[in-house]
Image (cartoon, rainbow, N blue to C red):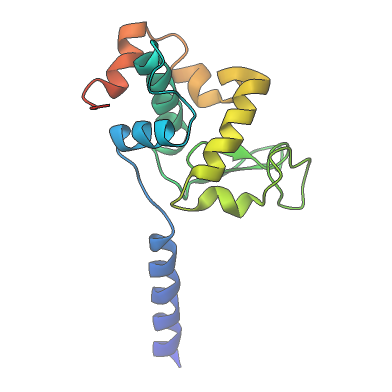
Length: 152
């Protein structure tokens, strides 16, 4: 019986691993272009992508399965660390992005990107403490360095 329990724990662990993806900076930036968060023809492409990569790195280390429990009882989900009180449905709050919070924890970040786009339209980057404390004061060159080696 103990062996079966260990096997079950291993299966759950492996299943959890297969549900998460840790992006490289360039892979994440290209995905944001592919999903329309930033236009590839935008003259400020590298600056805008650099801000998004810096934000997501400091929020989740570019990990799609990242979660964080906040002191107010809310929880942040996914690569953008989107909060369940306002933006997604976990039975707690408003659900402005009209999606279950579990949709923010998948390898496919299309839903997370669409929700982040809405959050940005409403609050700008100021919705994310990771950006406020780590990216906001960086120079344009430093922000662009987040995607300097990317080819797009």
